[in-house]
Each structure stands twice: as C-alpha cells, then as structure tokens.
Length: 218
Length: 218
DNA sequence: ATTGTTGTTTAGATAAGTCTAAAAATAAGT
DNA sequence: ACTTATTTTTAGACTTATCTAAACAACAAT
Ligand SMILES: [Mn+2]
Ligand SMILES: [Mn+2]
Ligand SMILES: [Mn+2]
Ligand SMILES: [Mn+2]
Image 1 (cartoon, rainbow over the protein chains, first blue to last red):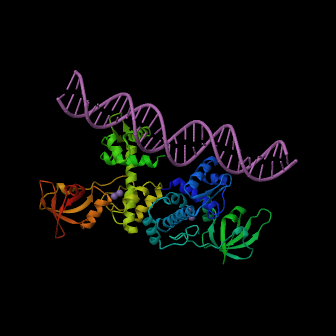
Image 2 (spheres, protein in one colour; image 1 turned 135 degrees about the vertical axis):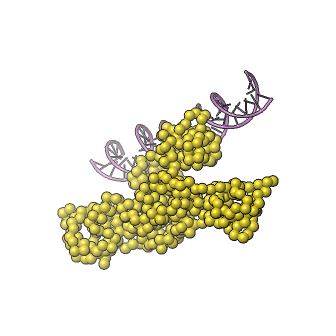
Image 3 (tube, each protein chain N blue to C red; image 1 turned 90 degrees about the horizontal axis):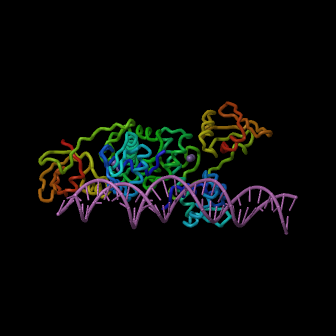
C-alpha cells in the first residue's frame, strides 16, 4: 500500500532524475516538493525502506525498478486525465494540470484501462508529452528547444518544458499551440532573445520562452 | 479548507440523520465510519468548531446549513461520477461505488459542471438515487420498499437501499434491475419472505431483500 | 592542512486522525 | 430511588507528514 504523498515524491524523483535513473539531491527534491530538506530526507528513507528508492546517506536518491513502475503509472494516469479534460470536458491546456494532479491518485485499474479506450488510446497529452501504454512503454519525443533551433529553418511546435498556467496563457495570447509552424529569423547574442515568424507574423520572445518551447524540424 | 476525512464524516451524518437534520448518535456515526466512538467524538467537535455541525455534549450531532451544503455537493459529485462510469466507461452498477468514493473528493468546480453537461444533466444515478443539481436541489423519489408493497399490485423497481456489491450482484443474478416490473404474489407472515413475479418468472426472496429493494406503483 | 561554505541528516515539536483504557453522563431495571 | 448497563467523553499514546534548529559530512579554497 502506497500513500498519496509517497506517490508524489516518487514522481518528483522520476522527473528530476532523467526517468529516475540519475541520482537526485535532497535539496532538489525538497525544492520540487515545496518542503524542507529534512522532510525530504525522512521520505527518502521511507521510500528506500519500501524498496522504491536506492539511497545511501549523503549520496542522493534514485528509483528502483519498482519505483519507476509506480512513477510511470502515475504519469500515465495524469496524462490520460489531461486528455480527457481537454477532449471531452472543454478544458484548455492551461486548465488541466492542477485537476490532473488530483485525479492521478485515483486507484482503479479498470478505470484507467477503460478511460484509455474511451479516449481511443491517445499517445500524447495536451502539452505534447508522451503517454505510457499499460505496460509502461512510451516513445521518446524527438525535440529541440527553441533556444537551440537553427536560424532560417522551419520547425513545428511539439511540446513545452514548463506547463505552468502563466506560460501556457502567454502562448495562447501569442497564438502558439502544438502544431504551430515556427521559423527562427534571428537569435540575438546579447540577451539571447529570439525573433521568430509564426504563420506570417513576426514575434520577439525572451530566452526563457526559448528554453521552454520544444520544436522539431519540419 | 476542508479535509477528505471531514467530508466523509459530514456525508455520513447527512445519510444517517435524514438529510442531516435529525440528530445522530456518536456510536452510529462511529459504526458508519468504521472507527471507534472516541474518534467520532473528536471529529464531531472539530466539525462543530468549523460550523459544519450542531453539537451539544451527550446530545448527538446534526448538520448546519453549511454542513448540508457540503454534504449535498459531495453526493452530487459521487452520483455524477457513478453515471459517468456506467454510461461512458462500461462499468456495471455493482462496480462503481468504491471508485466514486474516491472521485467525489476531487476539487474543481469546472470539472463537475462540465461533467454534468457531458452526461446530459442526469437526474438519477445507476442505483436510482436522485442527483442534486448545481444549486443543491433534488427531487424526492416516490418509493416503497418491497416489504411494504401490496399483494397483487404491479410495481416498477426504482432503487436500492443497499448499494453493496453482494446485493447488487444478487439482483444481477436474478435479472432484477432498475425498471424491472415486479408483482407481489404472496407475503409469508412466518419469516416475512416474499414470493414475487418478475417478467413471468416466479421468485422467492428473503425479508432482507424486501427491505432493500425500492419500488413504485406501476 | 585548516578554514569556511554548502548540503544533508538528526533531534525534537506539532497537527491530523486514529486507538485503548478509564472516567463521566445518561438510560434502564427493579 | 438506587443500582446496573449502556453510551459518550476524556486522557494518553501512536503514525504520518511536516517544521525549526542544531549537528555533521562533503566540498572548495586558500
Ligand atoms: Mn500536467
Ligand atoms: Mn501534461
Ligand atoms: Mn455509491
Ligand atoms: Mn449510487
């Protein structure tokens, strides 16, 4: 039996540590969980005790095979619910995350299998992130950040690094969505801002936007 | 801010006390919540403190207007989710309750409003229980228990008192569902068992079944 | 190699929800 | 009315998840 809090810590370790395989520092975990380092240490011990995490004092934490299984399953549920909210309940992509954070902890195998089928086995969530199948497999999405994109080349928007409401609304306001075609016109060396062309229009975006928007070549 | 546990206690008081207006004993509440009387006392104090409950020592507990609002909203969510599971995700009426117990605590006004619309504003859940609208209003379902039904009269099955898996499966096995037409052939005074006719077939049912099956005259 | 800085762990406290055991209030029986 | 029996409340303890403050380990830097 696994608690909601344990699930959230496991998910955070997974995201911070490149699928949970790389060691994550106590401070990084505490920061991600909005708690203090001492709380993170306590939870890490508990996860290690339950064989969800590998842990040696002062050496950081990573996930065991069991821990990874748990993480992938929660991510699967989170992303399926996000698809449900957008496709069936008229949510926009900036409205789904907080609700999915709650729904991802509902325990019912039938529920998630049926939901998957009801949504016609989607492979990506509303933010372009891949959805693991029921065996935990999911494809790697080929992508570059806008910051690393080449001048003069045409790209398609395939994802975001930051799913915060503020960033997604910024994209909405500038008519950038998954599938939008983007060409890099000029990368300014001084402040790393980028001038791009989207569907004819020209737009100047900051370095932060550049780092959080994922593209693939068109 | 209200916790999941508080919500469940409030719901229990509502169900035990005829919409929360009648006083409920500490023992009855503890029994319904599968806890001990001492735990119930603690929670009752907390609910009174937060103005969800009326409480005087040794005098039992009832809900305030606020408490009733909370209860009705949870029941609304519970029943809408049950409809969703049956109508959209191929659940049977005996499979939905436990999952709905989890889903009823998801906090999002938009979610429940959109779900309501998505399901086409259903008025009853899969067990025949009425679904409160977004203002908390719901119709009283006119019903008699099979035990109180008159011999020789035709009835329609409109609900169940007990939503347990065992009882609902018993009904499934005997082809009794909402809408099934039932005629009372004979009520046995000795053990209060009842002989009924359903769609031609004859069936003998116990007193317990009689008390848990709700009918209305046809 | 000693010092200083940062990162991590431990010790001790707190709040929510639960329990057992004991005390107090109410209800029932004679 | 007095004595039981039942119900309810209180007292004290435990678990989970959190915190602050203090101790300890690791890493840099001179
Ligand atoms: Mn999300
Ligand atoms: Mn997402
Ligand atoms: Mn139910
Ligand atoms: Mn129901």
